[in-house]
Length: 212
Image (cartoon, rainbow, N blue to C red; front, side):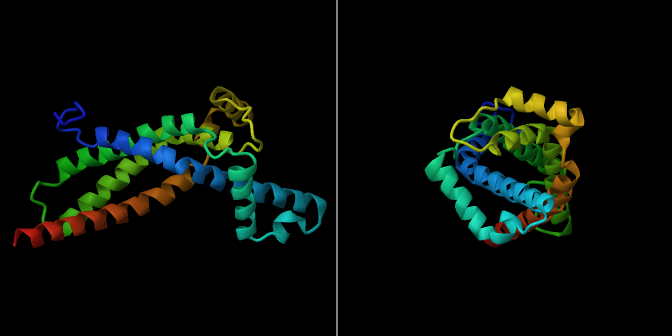
């Protein structure tokens, strides 16, 4: 067993949980800004389209929108940790699931003395892509709930996680919890395949270099 008390064949779950907690606290303010900026521009475009005018979104550049949202979130509303409980409930199991699944697949596919050959980067890429697809599919409902909460404007949050969940199901149905799954997979699977393939290749080359 490792220091986290988990079986040795599942080495990534404990460190993944620690990484998830850190990522939730550090990433929450940035995610609030991202969600609010995207929502701000979408709403402004809707207003512009319905009124037939130029609209706010056409007058403000992307940079101006981001600056306005940052000012609102950090200085006016101070809502930079909005949705943190849901972010923790999402990020911690997501990181644990991804790193744990990747580590387990790597143990199965790659020997301890992997040398950075063709099979090494293919196995690393496959393990990363598979772990990413599984994690995205399982955890997307929580990410959808988090997005609804963090898109709320104002200094005081009035939407609870249960309320956001009910709102999504009422407006979009149960499948609405997995809204955007296809684009998420199309983005994450190729990117994680490439990143983990490169990681395993460089890791193998460094091991060979250190062994000389």
